Image (cartoon, rainbow, N blue to C red; front, side, top):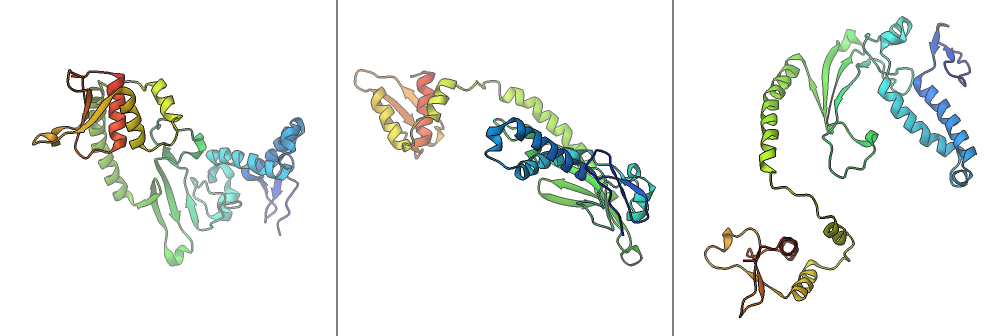
Length: 283
């Protein structure tokens, strides 16, 4: 029966099944440090202590610490020969068989990951962003005398996992190598395609954000009344060729008119009319 030594201090050791010394797991260390941080922070911030207990705050801090610890997993070779013999680990396995991972007969190497491209207005914390592409080596060798040993490459793309052998991994790499030059060419065309881009009108944007939740048709009607503009849907044989509203200047017999594509929604017409009024080019 294993005898576990006190792990209240950093770097404490436990005695395993054969009496050998095994370092405290990263998860144990994270839990100890989390409680120490929680106690010190709550002692210095009475306002926070009045709203949350030590146990709950320790759990929150611990989750953050364990997220960090998980990024620096030790390989079986770093844990030593005793660990490798006990769990049958290949040198590259990073699973914590004595802790949360368990899983005897299953071994996994460190992952390589590619984060998703940065998104505009993405306010998620870095640890909440799921990698776009992750790869790791996985080996199943439980009861090898019955089931054999199977080593594959696990490729995680978003929420889908693809299990590849050497041939499958080679095919995937070849396809990626063919795809990258095409992606680079498209990136180069991006400059040409976006040559007329313009920054957001902050004043108009803030006004839009604070606008009351009034139906688009009502807002369009109010804007037309204010600006003395009449909305006219295009008709005739060429009407379908019109994709953007056109603002026409007033003349002796007509007020300003905004000619729109046939069947266009009030919301889209409102957005186009606002753009036309900000950058007037009335005919």
